[in-house]
Image (cartoon, rainbow, N blue to C red; front, side, top):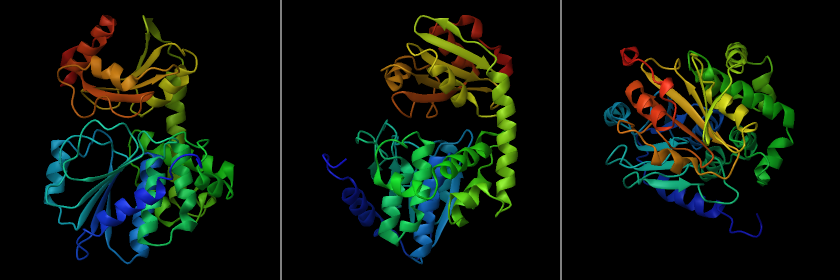
Length: 355
């Protein structure tokens, strides 16, 4: 990292300038993704605002939601807030809440310009900071947060950047490598479970003093996380028994589960089918939709791969993320178009199932 420009000063100055535009008389609204990286980013920002004596509200963006969708934009239009922060939810085209100072903190490949929002992005940096690490740098502008570096470590582990070489990771690991990894596994479990309720995970991140508190018996929410993890493990074990269909350079594994296990299934097969684009498709995650994860063990740009095969009806839930780890959600008619275009016409689903 020493041979490259340090991104920390640039990130901090950009966030300082943006936060200074927030109306101090109204709370900031923080939206974040419901995985370990997004929840960690939210918690770091919230705890930074709290320590600075500034009000903030949190809104987890969960299953089937996207801040650029009409439904969430309509919700945002009704909110009276002093500023808006959106983290780990992508960088897309269009303003989120016109007239309100907005900051987008993210590390995924941008697919558009979010109006006049200030974008703090890790995309293209080497090594690439996750959303939680970017949020840790930003939160330090609001108040001292050095004791919360372990939360930034959770985000790095959660998005597979543990070995990227960030000094913050080494500082977090001093609190226990195993505890950090176990905490990430537990924090991710509720959003993968059928209920998709990440509230217990966020609650722990907002009050825990370290990763050992998250995995221990200190707080009641930990039992909820363990129950969710057991549920997900059972569903994953069942899906692992389904073999892939291979056509050309694409391997497709299709299954039906109420749990968000498609990324885990795709990741599992990625290592075994290194020369293929692996698609794990879940027909049971949300009624009327097929959610899928795309992974590859090769040097394939999956963002471009999906863009070239985009069905006519695909919306903002399709094809964002990382070059080698992306996915999406398609309504059943669009899934049928997509599956046929990939050479899997037998994977079409009767369209009455969309009702």
